[in-house]
Length: 175
Image (cartoon, rainbow, N blue to C red; front, side, top):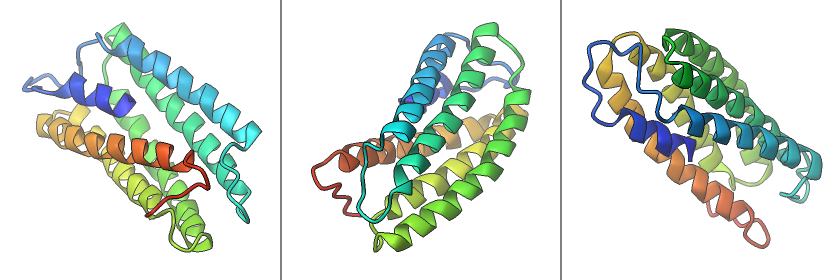
């Protein structure tokens, strides 16, 4: 959902001053970021995924949700305040680097599950690119926001796919 909100927030951006965007979506980012943190903590503590022979996957998803939730909270707070978004760009580089650790873990999960979580790996690769491109966007490259909008639509689709396929009985994930 956050991915779609960022897309709607940046559609049609042609401004020269890309360090500030409209704050209208800030509260929505804040609330959904807080929701991601709460769902991440609940996922980490309750193990709702319960994949056989892979007990750590619920913790992995929980930690990832909390981690990305804090980014959306930070972005939402900046949008609400109407603050300069260049610090968000700097933070996004750090998130992209830590995302590489999540990517490494997802490759291990994919190997342990016989290739079931390739879609998670694809999602994390796209997310890493989104964080790097966001840096360029808030530092004056307006076209980077359009690239991010397309990438975030892909992320939203992959996120919905993963979320619904993991709660499917038996945890069936075709790819």
